[in-house]
Image (cartoon, rainbow, N blue to C red):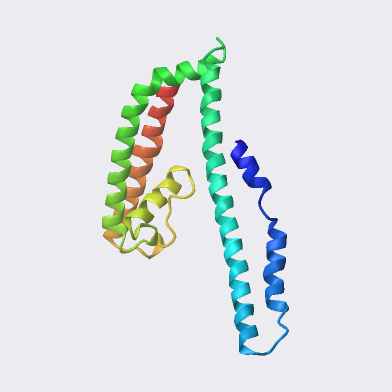
Length: 187
């Protein structure tokens, strides 16, 4: 934490960097080729400095994020000391084995349903064009964003039946059944 604080205090404010970058362009006094080359070099030097500062900030954000998660886990562990607050940790400890098997089952069914949707509906429904898009679409379906895909109106014949068979089986199997299993495990 001390290293982060020292590093933070030694950085140049972004407003000064922006001002330096702006003046590197606006302060062109000469009209010769050498003056222009110096202007371009000054501009790219300032631009590179801003890029390095941004990368430095991002690395610190990630480091602090990890530290905060570790402190969160430490806080949860401290709850185990108090008898009434230990309810959270004892519930999780009692359900770990059941949750592991539930998540194994959930992942297998989730991936299988994604493969089915991508393979059968990927050519006709934009949300299922690739396997990764299908996984993301199923995630949105799981959290209740939608069940009716944007261009499902354009499906005809047996594809309409296939789409609704997929959508209803996804909702019944993954949403209603498995999520209720999960609640039963935790509660």
